[in-house]
Image (cartoon, rainbow, N blue to C red):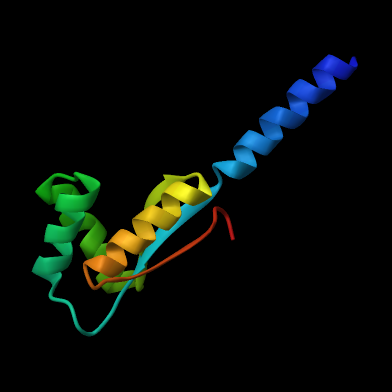
Length: 95
């Protein structure tokens, strides 16, 4: 493998790792399901049906992955969820 091919391959791996983050919204005993659905529609631009599916996932499974991408973008999404009063974290995808 040439040096150029190796650098290209390493760059692809670095790009994948940089994009390998998720925003997770966790269940809490405070927020109403209708409010969580509203937040998901408003912030993540989901349809009502999509937002309700995600809200049910949070409610029934304790959490739902709401977005994926680079770490900085996921930090923005987590802070936005905190701004809405929801409990959210970010982590590397696949952890």
